[in-house]
Image 1 (tube, helix red, strand yellow):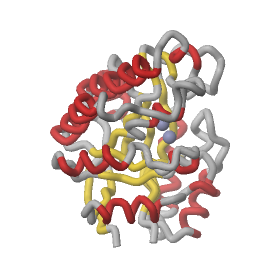
Image 2 (tube, protein in one colour):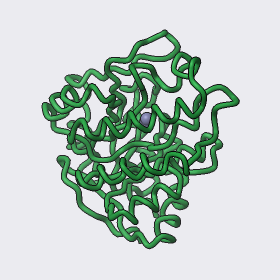
Image 3 (cartoon, rainbow, N blue to C red):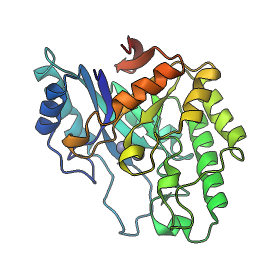
Length: 271
Ligand SMILES: [Zn+2]
Ligand SMILES: [Zn+2]
């Protein structure tokens, strides 16, 4: 049974057209207890018109989610969330913005390095795969250090999804184990979690983001906070491949996933 999906996009995200009503109906149909709507906010990105705009209008978004939360409170616990596209220079701005609104849950995701979105060619064109990966992981480390106003680190190694054909699909984990360890240790010392993002399976990468070894390492180092999210941009992807995620967590001895309300963490038993 699926407990919760903590990474769902709706029409408020520049890259989704999904209605909140469809999301709520799908979650109820699947028997979920909780969902977090986590639409995109990516500030200070140099746009080269390759993709959509990722600025979220919080003064419209928050009241709509608050109403949805109140309306459904007896059947489905809806969390007011956001996926904040963090960059190392945005920590103070992110803190101000997030603390101004009544969020339950924030995913901190690195989508851009040096103001360039990693899914666009301008980021990759003058870099080898290793240079790109190194920049990406150090950006995560610096951004984790830059603020505390988040709940979990999003799709920690999803950079494999991007780049030209010769660059995508592979990370030399041995080479980056030190920086990945540093990221995990900083997250743990700040009492922050990671997410298991199941979209890697849908994107034909045959794995979660992050990969099993990183998830395992987070718990080995003493981490306790984990959410599972589909990263759905359409309601039909909600809860996809969650059984695989629960089975994996149980196989490494993890018995609880996390739940958030008003940015406070609590724990739910997996089965
Ligand atoms: Zn993301
Ligand atoms: Zn997302």
